[in-house]
Length: 167
Image 1: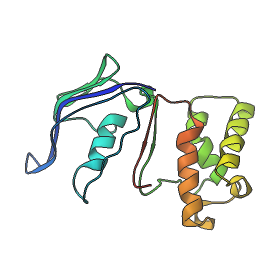
Image 2 (image 1 turned 30 degrees about the horizontal axis):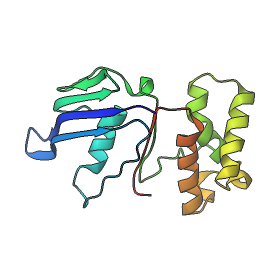
Image 3 (image 1 turned 60 degrees about the vertical axis):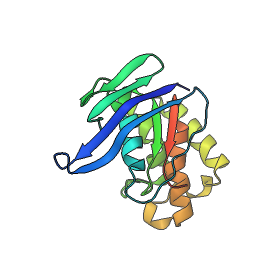
Image 4 (image 1 turned 60 degrees about the horizontal axis):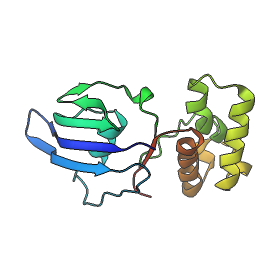
């Protein structure tokens, strides 16, 4: 895991007309569990996207341990180098890929061996009780199974931090 330090992060959209985050400061210690609660439109997803590197803060700085990863509108470390697993509320499953392929996707991108991919996917699928649907497409899965496939995709990869939305 990694220590996440958020310093004075703000995020504005529509040329400053919409303020999604306003001067957020927090330190999330290595191994600490952290949750964000708030109504729709409060900036929870924007905050996660900035930590994951899918968006940049308009102002402020984001550190992983002592390394500056984003600062004042600049992405200094791209998402693929942040070692973060993330699951969004909409699950973001690829409709043309089986559950196995969806779970294996990040490992395939890492050029991992097929045998290691198979082993990791089957291990996580068994823990989440979805091993019996690995050959199914997302449209053939229940909502709960889709959620567990998305969660498995975040768990199968060795990461420094995991982000989850609306569990």
